[in-house]
Image 1 (tube, rainbow, N blue to C red):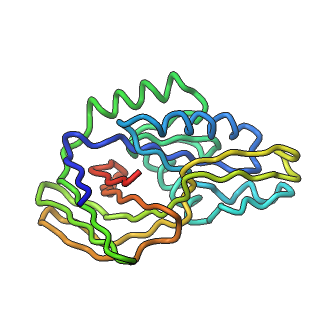
Image 2 (cartoon, one colour; image 1 turned 90 degrees about the vertical axis):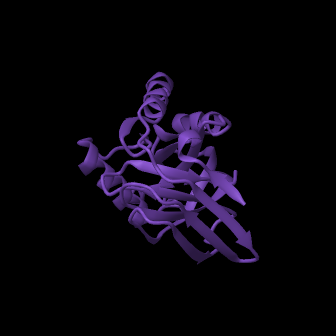
Length: 212
């Protein structure tokens, strides 16, 4: 079983990006460096509002755009790319190494208490366990691909070869945790790998399980 005690859990990094955004490749390269850190979970969400610029990002989804908009409303930010959201409570330009580093440290220093999470897999079935604790949160399951290389023929990045990491392919809510111990089952999601996130209504991340 994979387990993630709340006291030692990694900080969640969510990069909102697009293959049609010329400012995004440096942020994606930085995420490739950050994902190697043992104290973070790094995921890359491709938004769809750049798709009209002569290139449709094959990994984009409107649901990911909506997730970014929800963060913008909660954090009081604009919707832009590349944007990185740190533990659901802080935002930075996705290529700003210094600001991201400071936000990761701040998130570690102020992480809200959360329950332990567990994750097991048997065949195509996942079992997620959430321990007892205080608060309420949604249990989210993300499927992602560890790496993609894409030759972009047109748009702002026309002629470029993009190397991207931990590209999210699916995200869905498995259920709600309301402070009592909870066990949920799910089919393995779309994507080569998967991660579980426990997230409060205000966006604060209370726990993560990330097989790697």
